[in-house]
Length: 157
Ligand SMILES: CC(C)(COP(=O)(O)OP(=O)(O)OC[C@H]1O[C@@H](n2cnc3c(N)ncnc32)[C@H](O)[C@@H]1OP(=O)(O)O)[C@@H](O)C(=O)NCCC(=O)NCCS
Image (cartoon, rainbow, N blue to C red):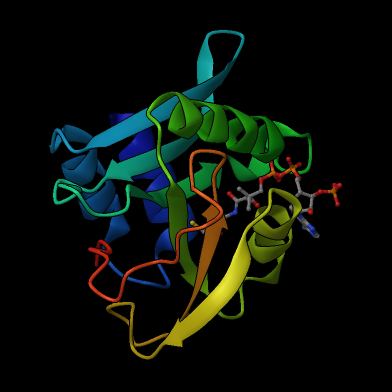
């Protein structure tokens, strides 16, 4: 968990106190985290938030954060984490995966588009430091093609 706090502080400091938020989410019981290791040392993570309000509604989960140690960026670690996250979401029968990312975070957006995410909207002042977020979604294989996303879909905030 110290690794998640340290890396989150390093890469997300512009957006808010993510060195505190990510460990809280990690311990919350509603998130699942995959950690990438090299020589038994953590070098990246991705966190999936499960929506507790699924009920009879569409099954939505949120990619809460993905981060790779800058010393190991551009080596395919982010790619691998995305593949495994999507596989985990499929196993959990998630119908729609959503995420939020900074509107200027074009590198991350490129990674997300590569994995089938499409932009669905922009949220003003989404981050504590005031930046806007691009919301993206990916319809999973469990999403029935005949179904549309209900207006009352319980997106995580
Ligand atoms: C985004 C991030 C997770 C990518 O991890 P990574 O291990 O460097 O990614 P990979 O080496 O697996 O690259 C995968 C794809 O991401 C995109 N990408 C990642 N870094 C990029 C860069 N510097 N320039 C352009 N595209 C980039 C590309 O599409 C790339 O595929 P390609 O090499 O075929 O073009 C990493 O840069 C990071 O931790 N950034 C800071 C945290 C962050 O912004 N997270 C996203 C918001 S939650």
